[in-house]
Length: 383
Ligand code: MTE
Ligand code: MO
Image (cartoon, rainbow, N blue to C red; front, side, top):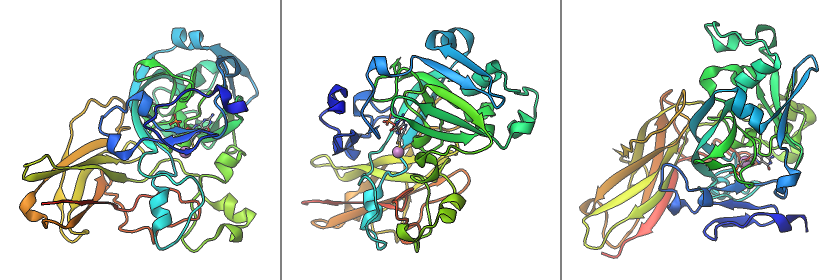
């Protein structure tokens, strides 16, 4: 049993599959700005490598085939350390909700709202490492996408030899100092543990978590995206009419691999203390690409009328907004029908005024990816 060396996990995690371990945080426990490590969701495609099986150094290969190997100590000694606060969300988060929609069942792990978490990650900028390895990075360049000018259309590949997981991101993202792409060794102030990719992991903030490769051993630059199934197949969305069986090789090749993610929000708790005349509703809101959440709207009548939630202050770190925003709203008891089930609904708006679709009908896709329709939670009240 190759899974027998997997780490022990917190009993609160909701296990979707045990081998490999795919486990999410119960939504009602997503209450802290920084998700406690023991509660952080786990998404593994295989078993977790033992310490002696995971790469202890990083090999960087440039377009010309030149290679350089750096130990963790080299990375710590040679480059400036950065800390960012990043929310990681699985592309399949809330898939279970999409499967309940009119489009019908989708394929993949039936996540509720908890395949998401936020942590502080420390490490070095991928940009600095690529420059050290010989990549032409222009510091004076006015636009980050002009850097490494003749290579701007290329892709950076991240590979884990331990579980042969591999994906890529555009090189211009890696080179953009505002994009904060890190090679990280520390999560919430502790060395990255085995489940979350230690000793070294990429963190591509604002981008679907599938690009943040754990047990990182190799980085390379290429004119093409990664040829892996994780780049070419697993994380692509099609129109609601498309069935997996109808997809031709050309359809797959033409579809966009998910990188930056759309705006998302969810209700985590609906609470009323005994004798309290207000109901408190709390949750999270998050958008990809470093876009801030500017507004969270909550409804107690299925979306006919709305109020704005209060956005919680926090100490997020980074060049842009890579972390979720926690929110809270208090609802007067006399505005809720006593003895009735109340359905609360939430939707968020980001700084580009992107918002969430009302239902899953328009965004249904057979893999159940990027499920971000309005989130609904129902609670019954006695009095
Ligand atoms: N990296 C490796 N090497 N192997 C994996 O299975 N899963 C990816 C990504 N990086 C994965 C990986 C996916 S799909 C997600 S959602 C995140 O890791 C999950 O990160 P976490 O387990 O630290 O929460
Ligand atoms: Mo994922």
